[in-house]
Image (tube, rainbow, N blue to C red; front, side, top):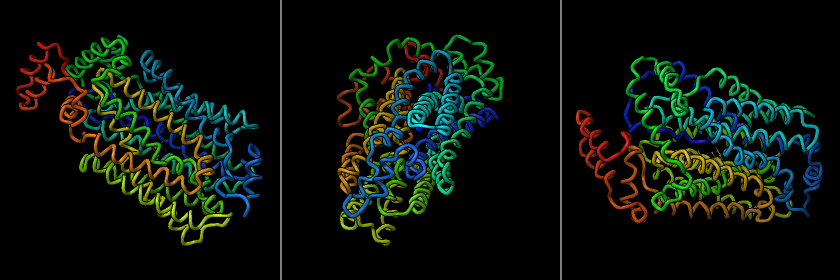
Length: 534
Ligand code: BGC
């Protein structure tokens, strides 16, 4: 998720505990939450390029598509606010639902939120697959959006709380991997259903019921997290759950730390007021900018509208969905590359390399379209193949950089007391800018024509410069020592307050990595009124 995992950190300490059946089940749950989100992202493009679907809900667009002659620009044949609303309504609903989800997740637990997500998804799927008119279609998308809001808030949190610490980072990107698998699955389904007339689109929308049911049933089977139980005062039940998921009775140390962390977290009465303080400006600016930039790479113009885009370029129905399947597969494989390399090469190296890798194809595509697609003319066969290759190059650059890192970096830079608020702001900004792209891309394509690719290329330059100057490397840095990163940075050091007791302790701790000295440092921490996790 696209949600990105965050957690109540345990000071980088590894407690005893196995990779139990429960943890495995939670991975399957992650798969269904991520798959569902990805499926929703990927399905709309193929469906909106099917004539049966357009004929039923958007006859004006179908007429325009068939009329697209030498006198009418091919760039404008899909420009329709209703058609864009079908895609974008999901994201605006998701954005609003995130606020309710954050309340339910905190007050009632992770499990009720995941169940709510599953139920919203199922209702949405029924409305969509059975839609008789545009209203049913949009209501269905809004229900799916509410599901996305609840799932993206609760599932990553659930995962990070249930996973043993050493698997937490991997699980974070694994969630994104499932999003990409969901998109690919949707593209494959569309490829098959477009041959089924006149109800293939119903099957496309209805098959989302598979990940939706998995999430709903899964959330009934799984137990609440120990963190959530402890946070809500059910200490004994929390301890019992911890023993069960860790597969050992030796959980006292982890349990005590959870109780302590929850006590401290409760002391922060106004995390949202806290987060706007000057000292948290670096994290806030980076988290929000990463979401704006992630969406302004133009990735979702391709993920949502690839089949429509390929048809605009002159591909036939079949060929355009086929190309969408290829880009979907490139997306999945390149995300695996990210999982394997992010802790080796670091975040900055991947983001900076991807800057070049995304800029060049966008400019080349603009040139090919400018010279080959005008006055209703279609692209020549060789140019069309180069365009698909360039889109694959662009997608792979995104998938090993801005895709996963747009979620990973915000999840690791916020200090404990504002981490939850930071995550909500991250999810909301992401969904907002996703909505902006979904609602405006087809109109932008109509007005900017090939220039749309130059528009996104311009943003890629700006975001690469932003990363170069303003995003410090966070690879291998324990979350509790992140303060040094800001302190050393040429700009951010002006915002982070001068050395205080907390830094002195961290500095001492950094010089004494010997575990035998832990006791001594815990003593120092307590004298300074600091939690164990510092
Ligand atoms: C983004 C989504 C996008 C997906 C593509 C995610 O990181 O947040 O908006 O559709 O990547 O793989």
